[in-house]
Image 1 (cartoon, rainbow, N blue to C red):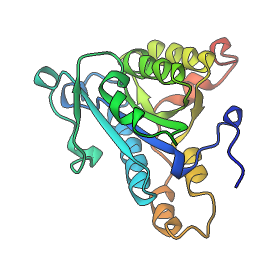
Image 2: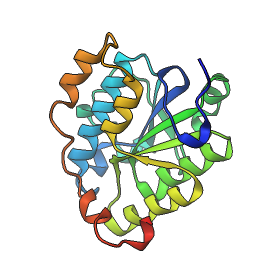
Image 3: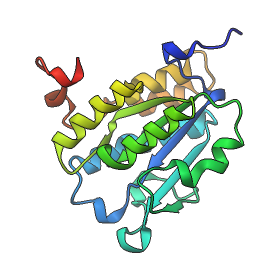
Length: 205
């Protein structure tokens, strides 16, 4: 099979990893669309498990910001604690151990902080980054919008959860497709993206 060309941004289960960033209790009432963001991230997590895509989970200063929220469904994952506003230092050993890795699918908070800095660090390592736009948010929607634009300017791909899920599945003949189809039968919940993307928004052109 021919290798996927990096410039196209294809994602394949065997060369991808899912990063789940800092979806913790203390952010629950501060992040815009937090329940919707976590719901979509939980969908991505379940698909990754079905397709045997590795998953990494971080928590930002959990002593103060609390544990990962239970509705993410990440009880089987061992979270890595960090204080850096990037996931990469905490996950460097994991990244170094996966020479076949090409693509990182990124969910979590906040877009202008740990998501942006993680994206830049991953791009600096030569990896493709796919920001799951309906699974990333911030306290401020201005910060969210500008962070998405900034990541795109730097070379990240902005994708919806369903778009990435269907790329990973690849074929309706995939043995896991029926289970995954149940997960995406209902559209992802509205997380305020339409207002960010509609119209002649110069930041996203």
